[in-house]
Every structure is written in structure tokens, then in C-alpha cells.
Image (cartoon, rainbow, N blue to C red; front, top):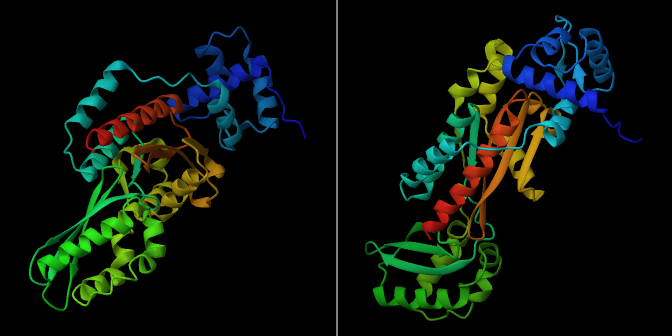
Length: 347
């Protein structure tokens, strides 16, 4: 079945209704449109067009109101072809730049600051996932002796990120033996992805048969998954609970409770963000039931990737479908670009 092509008048009315609803959160009537927007149509003509848009599935008619509200389908057309081009004001860009440049050099601190900035700018719930190390490429390993039975494994990846893991041994570790193992690990593993290392580690070090280094190698074999899998890749920073709860939608106790449950149980949000990422969508806007999880059917989720070399994370916002899409998209795109820039500077 061919998708119906909206006429110019229908596009104009739909655009005005969504603009008005975004600002007021109240169902929009023909008189609202006639008074606020000078479009040369009588309330009766506007009413007829609104009825047509409702019949086509772009608007909905709440039982308790004479006005209409956009449906998921209406929002989708608006986002794809009717909203103003995303543009962030120069002064807002300056605020973002200053806050990010003043953040601590630690990656985690920078991601936390990013989440706060995004939430404050959009007045929605901000989400930032940590970069995933699955395809991180190892640059080098350093083994640092902390005590007679403990060592620090410093793992540097080609993106510039560094992570550390502490390993313990049953017997005293010899400094020279440690140096030998470090050299061999770098010779065999540098340039491989974490997933390649995990799946082939035993094979690559099978000829480490020197009795002097065998106890150290055995601990590495037992710890390979822990060393080359970063659980922080599953972490998500969520900011702005207070902001989103100030929205008119959450005056209703049931809606209020539903968003609290979502915030407390991040798995649903993380799943949707990962799905968007797996589909290789640089910028993804999912509206209402497009989120494919009933818990998110009343929300829109807008996400964008940021990068640290070959590694990627995701940032975005979640909020009521009645949001200022153009402004929020502009903020997400710019902040993702600046976060990538700041992380690249650290390398």
C-alpha cells in the first residue's frame, strides 16, 4: 500500500499542532491554530483538515478534550520533514565548550560532566554509555610489581585509553620473570583486538614452558577474560531525573511511577541504546512504540555515537514524546562532537 502524501495545508496544520503541543502540553483545537498562526484559513477549514489528519493516523483525539494531540506517526513525519533544521545557538555552544574543557582529564569524569550538561540543556533525562572494549586493539601491556605477591597489569589500547587490573599470586613474584612475561605478552598480543586475545590466548602462549615463568603465565590464563573484558562498557550514566519529572506528563501518578521504575532499572534503556548502536545508526531517533519495548512507548529516545579512536560509546536523551526535537538533536550532535574532540585530546 502506498503511503499517503500529505498536502501542503495538511503539513502546515500538523506542524503548527505539534509546535503548539510541545510548548503547552495541552490538546490543540482549531481555534488555537487560527488565533496563534496566521495561515489564512477559517477555524472550520482547520477543523476539517484536523479531522482528515486524525483519520489518517497523524493525530489523536483524547476523549476528555475537544483538541487533538500528535500520534507516533505524526511525530515521525514532523521529525523527518517538518521541524526546523537543528541549530544550536553560539552562546550555548560556548557553555558546552567551557564546561567540557574544564572537566578533569579522567574519562569517567568527562562522561559524567557530559551527561549533566546534556540534561541541563534539554531538560530531559540524559544518558551516556561507556565506550565498549569488545573491539579495542591492544597497544601494549605493562606489569608493575606492587608487593611480593601482587602485580598491576596496565593495559593500553590504541584509542589512547588505559585500564588497570590487579592480579595476586600464591608465591612471591620475581621482578626479572615479570619482565620476561611482559616482553613475551607484548610480542604475541600487541595489535590484536580484545576479542581475538580472549579466544586465542592459550594458543598464543602455549610455548611459554619455562618453569620460572609458568606460575605467572598460569595466572594470566586464568585471568584473561577479566583483563581483556571491560565491564564498564555496560555502564550507563543517567542524569536529570529532577528535570524530566518537572515535565507536565508526570503530574499523573502512574506516569510518575513508570519513569522512576525505568530510571531504577536501566536495562531497558541500555538494551534500546545498544540496539540502535548495533544497527550502525550514527544518530537515531525512536519515538513511542518504535522503541519496541512497552515500557518506553510513552517516550522518545534520541542517541548519537561518540568516539575514542576505534572505540565507540553512545550519548542521548530520553523524555516524553512532546519534546523540542530540533533543539535536542542539535544539542546531542554538538555535544557528541565535542566529547569526541576532548577524548581525542587526551590520547
